[in-house]
Length: 457
Image (cartoon, rainbow, N blue to C red):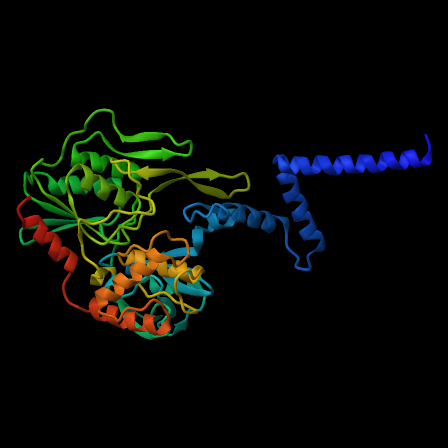
């Protein structure tokens, strides 16, 4: 065999290898784990930024989950789990306040209904600048240590309101214990039951509260309730509707499974009793599933704003590295087969912009008009959703539905219609919303009581 023949054979072998590689890539049989491993090795070998392999693998795992584009799915490293800082969040329980670190600042993540922080007007998105005389910066632990203290004592907190740049000082009085998960009182003779979370304790307390009511109406306040235990929500829905199947679960293979028992449960409510449910843009997950079941199966009248629309089910998977993978495994459907996720529960009696529902106005770093795309648009859509408007898909694209939601808001506030949203528009909206929020009374509660006392149609 001559030299030229050997050369030709070598070239053919190389070409055949390349063709096989291309075919392998085309049919999806590339060893992606090997590619990932090689990439991590290249970064360690060639990148001028020194980093260890564990951090790189953590980043890869986090990126894989982020590729799902599902905010409910997440990867938590072993350190995050051990520190108890999932999403870098901590609680100041005596103030009814939940905090997190965002972009190097300590921000309010959540306030408990009726707690000291809520009473002082703090809202999610507010930034803590100082507690007493101590500058906070990004020191979450420092903020927690200073905020918590003896019940009855007071602490001054310097806060930047939302992203407005406006600074205020509020005085908070620490309370002795966490707010009760269920609280009831009578208004104009109607029992109003506030349920702050869906738990087994809440179910027991709620059923005890309505025991002996007979055909008397009652109001279930689920505003600000971000959910809880789905199994408890299913059981409560059965208790209050008397139905065995109160919804469905849509699995990844497209099949549906009924949620509930095979046999009808004991009906805890007189069939003639009118149920009124109060909701807002913070009512989510198991709480909005319960609201939907009562609306569909018990003829409950829902009053307030459209709920958040978080209708998915998550499952946690421990990992060999000590971390945790939390994935969405199914979607909740109403008893009618309709979706909850991204849709929410639409109130029968809509009440927009009540004082309790005003959320911080988002930041926009540029004018937004039809078909503008970006994270600032997503923040605007999420804000409109929380306010009870329908901006369409929460996808960061300012489409016709988002523009229509802005037009509805402008009409509600009496603003001159504009199709371009900028800083001056936000300033005008914030001023009008602040005026609305300062009005006395609770419009949603007032309407709920009116509905409860009215004759059935």
